[in-house]
Picture (cartoon, rainbow, N blue to C red):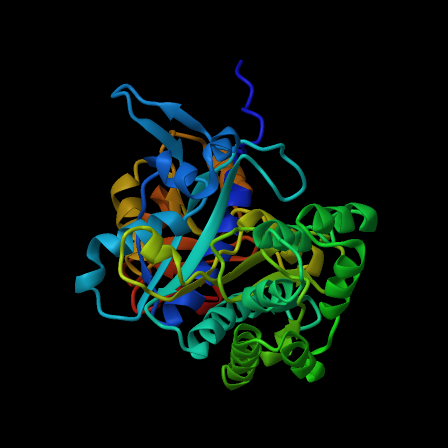
Length: 434
């Protein structure tokens, strides 16, 4: 007997059915905005991650040497991969490029609530537009996906920020500040104790007083954003504030402004983010960690050897999304669903198979006996797979030119002419023949 590997999961049919409904709903929201599906490899050159984040990042990945002597890694995220793909064909692609993909990823980290070593995400990305409407559309896709799942404004919130506001404010202090380290500290603000947070800011180069002042600036509400522009007195902060406000205004036009709130303490830890960033949180706080996030990464394509290309995206993670849906009571029922079970009694396989084929031809889920079971065993099995209707094809019924149609919920049954079943009915049930 073998045990499952730590950090990896099995999904049995009941749970997988619920997950499939959620995946289909999220992808459908993206397809409605014109996002096209792409497929991507599980392995990439390890250097693709080490060159951007340092060799130490490989300790957090499933990285190894393959039989050809190549250093490779199981992909820990999709953004570098789609950036590579865009660069390969960027000149021939009509802009903006809008891609969506659902697939697994791998990171060698300690499993915890909503985090596994193998995890699944749906990635939604736009390449080739710097317009605030592109950022707003990404937020709209995410909001539509969540509301299509049954969530409401009382269930989730998008905390929206801008990386250039953070970086621009840090530049105003008379100190040698490691901006990336300071931004990472902001990203950890809600996850660590206050003393540790301020220690991280100080280790990034701020003094005690500067760290306190900087943190205070992050609490400024949306209607006072102009105070940040006045404080910094730089074009970088002024442009970032203007861009952030333009994105928030655009979300109103997309009909999703009610889900967005200003949160300058939202930083996103990855270094490649350049503009507006956001994270989705459970409004009730029951799911304590970020459900998912996204943002703008305008420099990444150029970093992969392409022409300067603006880009923005979001990546709902399925594990944390399931926590939010379960908390809100909208996670799909984890149960099997079968439209019809065609039950055979005696030597009736030819007719039973024809009935099953006709029902499947109408797009229904249909099972029939493939194990030579008795009448009772077949009926018990039909009940176990939650068959809605059982069509009994028995020798005696066929002698009378009939089949029996049984409603499994009520237990009621009636007969129908075999030649008229399913006939003109798209979804024939007991009520059609009673």
